[in-house]
Length: 370
Ligand code: ADP
Image 1 (cartoon, rainbow, N blue to C red):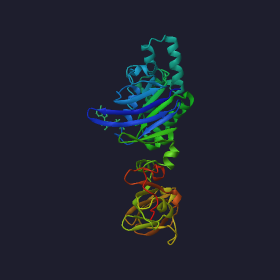
Image 2 (tube, rainbow, N blue to C red):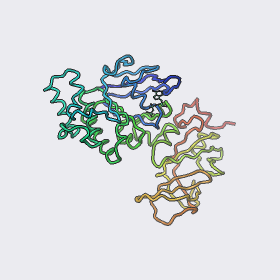
Image 3 (spheres, rainbow, N blue to C red):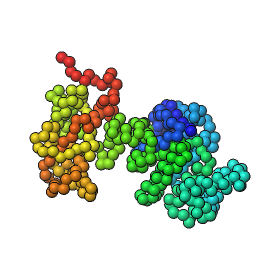
Image 4 (spheres, rainbow, N blue to C red):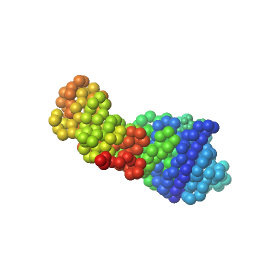
């Protein structure tokens, strides 16, 4: 099973740098998803693995062998695209088997391989149809079968499901996941859809503006975001982020005079401009006067059925809370919100990095000594 190693990988198009030095190790057999907003360089990174783009600086190695100078067909990668680009005049069977035919594989062997692959993506009954006689999901299945039939060392997926409707996307995700489980081929999947990423990935590579923000399992990225960007990008509704300053008196000051008592955090990071983050599902309504409670005013309520989202304003800082109550609650009503200090993620406002992961020498003194 092929491992993929990125070492100092950069990409420049004409005068624009779009990938700024990526160092990541993908293990053999892993399913890795590159996630990030549109334009952050995901597709470029994938295309550099495939050999469809030159690598401006650094190296990419597959199974320890640097592939920078290799032609795409010499790299053992198969790519599945969003626009599946099937040959419309050929049958499903011919589409899937085309690459093997070009490679000169004898017909009986070819037929056997095509049938086996078609079966694995539930397309055997459709082998004699033309792509025009298939549904979108089936066409995507043919595109996957066509990639699989070459028995590649690596599968590369470039937003393959963006053209499909929501229900089909979910079904295709399950299909890809099952395929990966049965074939175990190293896979790199690009998407800007966080749900797709979270459900598919063994590990995520979260990118922003040409840099890797974090590499980790979906759970690590969700529960311990390494940067302000990741904290804000992963999760729906998004993590609450309040910007302010931690004081020597143990209070965090934010918005228009809002104060939250956070003695533990203030002790460690006193006099720092920080953004503190709390997931909406970890915020609960508490009685006024509760220690550490944040006074807020309801902006509006969004009913979700199973729960409701409270959009509130706390002294100028917006806060979203997931609430399971069903009491009457409406715009303008005062509420008190509470959360545990241990549930807080804190980030340096200037660098965007997570405070408790910064090197001691990079973090200013945590206590003010007289
Ligand atoms: P993503 O896949 O994350 O949406 P891309 O890797 O496609 O992002 O693109 C990253 C950046 O590189 C974008 O700003 C895009 O405009 C730019 N870019 C992509 N391809 C080219 C190209 N062939 N020439 C110049 N700029 C490009």
